[in-house]
Image 1 (cartoon, one colour):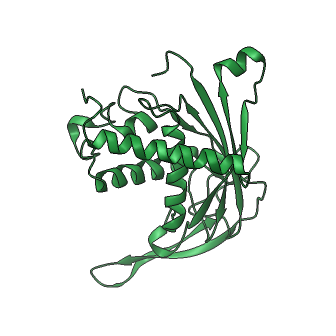
Image 2 (image 1 turned 90 degrees about the horizontal axis):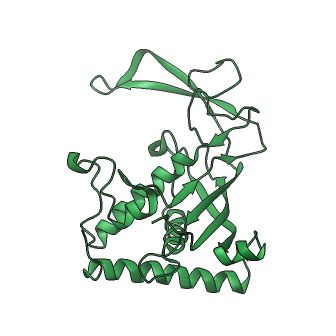
Length: 252
């Protein structure tokens, strides 16, 4: 899949927190002042790890494709295919057991360092009351915080559909937003609701490299050029999925 570079997409996006967000971790330069701190970079700014967003979008893609009748999609509970099957559409996007991911997410960073502490109480489900010594606190990133992120897509083609992988990501972003998508801890209690917004993307081909055009062809959100490419890419992804369902592409 990666022996030849046909093109590469660099996509810039933003994540806005619609509710308080907690993605925990021990990667912090500060002393542990709370039970569950948020994960931060070396400068003390909260981050959303690329792996967190990738995991959520991969799970959504798996569920969506099964709902569309693509039964060959990997099942994480199938021990024979732990880590991926390497062949289904999801593995071709996000990677499989022996297949590198085509879509690579970088960590999302915010310039705002403000966080605050929320209290929590562990509940004994049998007694239906708070557990003894069950009080804890956790750090959250407040509603309205803006994170900036990047992802790259290697070789956007799937079979004859030239921009299918790009269309998969653009349509997943839209689906995530339409369903009030969430990230991180305690999403069932209202935490972690976020919105993903593409700002721009560039498509860089091997020919661009030869000509010294390292920025490639740039598509900025709101421009007619962007909307045309968006529509074409999403159509390519839909066409690929339909053809895969029908058995047009040989499944090894």
